[in-house]
Length: 416
Picture 1: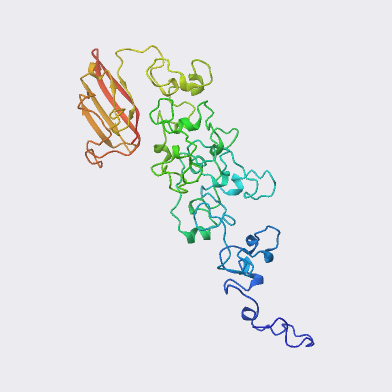
Picture 2 (picture 1 turned 120 degrees about the horizontal axis):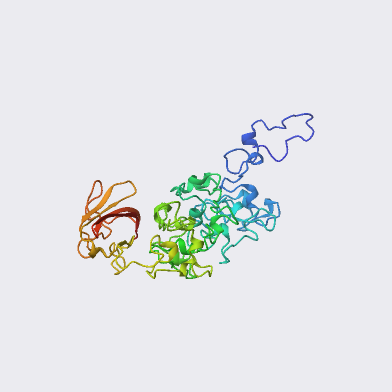
């Protein structure tokens, strides 16, 4: 290797000054890419030299995090890489998506301080102390940002990337290269991931996204506890409250994993007419107090905005399919209840999954021993006795009443 200067300071026009082999005659800390003056990552540790400027003064040469005498940008093993919030193997200082939700940090930071750096003076929409770019539920509505940032029909779940893939993609999941453009369903105010009422229907997302039994009250409640520190409250977590940065939190198919009363338009938190009765949810606020969740005109336990047929004077002999099954043996909705089915013993019920496959058929449904309890009766590709996946199903109920043949059809929801 060439010395600091050539061997002769008075050698005239020696045009390469004894640098006959630049690859070996010039400094190259990591021996890869190129010699140092042409290598953006001099020490080959995966952190570009400008990003190893720990004190932020624009000069990486004076930063020696571990105090071993070698500046961080030339130290491949001993400098502390810093925090890696999402655990993808890429430090936050060089990770373009620190919480791995698919929304780039530069999008989640409102850049109030004008420095284009989400690590300084970051936005924190829900005020939980976790900045948006480190928070997988930035508005605390119980629906992860990864889900709210995408349309329901076009949702793409994250890929199961390894550390090498994350490193190659600067911390961005390979399903979202370039970053997601956050969806704004109502086209007003803010994108859904920081909008508490994405469809502007006067019922908050934390209610509509968590009300699986359609009673106007969310089944999951905010607890103020966040065991794994991912920004998603324990009350909204799935089966594991300490699952780290599980960015969609088991919502792999929002169209079927989130409440959808009428099975049309979109899931409830993005549906202006939740029950599909032609009356928009804000207009089903009978008492005019701005809260449709407390209006139940017919007193059947289902608020009007989720009740597509009984918002007027109740018919005591009306046959009503309740549209909800939660087969968890808690004594509530363990099987499909049909009001007044005892008045119409001459009946038949068929239930289909979203592919049109019949998964249950019965004649003489009776709410006693001939019931649909969330298990298949073994039609087509679905095995008999198998507990069905949570989701939306379609039913057709035919019955004879007062000498007249009737057909009731619609959607029902199975939730484990």
